[in-house]
Image (cartoon, one colour):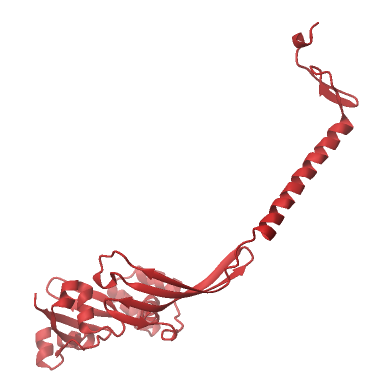
Length: 255
């Protein structure tokens, strides 16, 4: 019978494995030898790959001190347009992981230049109880105040955490108030009145005339701007006034 007319048939007998079509049986010892050689070859290739990866193409050594500069090209917040921020990063490697810390060094914007390194390390510890905070969320404002009073504190741990974070970042908050709403605005420590006005709208900074300022506590005690003025708690400040945390302000502009 011609070879091509034979049906494919794999023969497995005592001592040989092969394909009857080709008529070339492989002994079991040859099969095991080839199998071991294949596994050993794969292991060798794997070793060579990782050896080359670590020795010839190692992970780049990024450990050390790095300096970065970031420029803001477009933003809806005018004082931050074309802002340049400079950071310093300390990076180290732990096994296959890269870890590090980053700190702002210098800032250049339309509001001026500020140095940060060495000026904002007055960190503090804040105790926050997750159990207490979760309970406070479920209470009304009146119940919350009573609960805090029972604990001998006046503010929640989250409020203290926010205050400490603002202090660390060199941020301050001032308020504007009117018949419809009261809003809080974030500025940098050391910002003057025109720069603070520019946070609301860039035109306010350009057309700044003066600012009527009262501290939050004084205004709450007085009840209104008019009463605060009568009590001498409302003052008029000019362009050189450095904004204070908690100021309540009404800006006067050319607009």
